Image 1: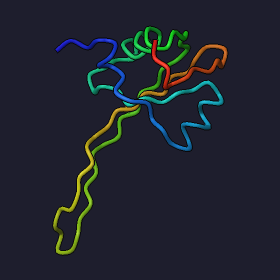
Image 2: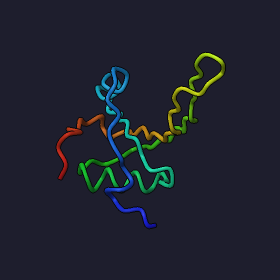
Image 3: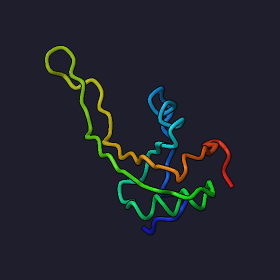
Length: 98
C-alpha cells in the first residue's frame, strides 16, 4: 500500500491544548502509522498550502480499561500524532482544504 497525500493525514486533533498550540503556529494531526516526517510535511504543504518548518511525531500506545473481576471492558487503539510547526507562525484553517 502506497501512502498518498490524503491517506497520510487522517484527521486534525481537536482539543483545548491543540487550540492553544494553533495560536503559536503549531498544528496537530492524527497520521498513518506508516507515515514519515517527510510524508507529513509534503501532505500539509499540498493540502493546506503552508510552508512547514518542523514536524514532530508522537506515538501513543494502546490502552485497556479493566472492569470487575479483571474483565476487559474497552480498548483504545494505538495512535500516531504529528505536531507540525508552520513557518513564520502563520495560521491555517484546518477545516478548509485546497
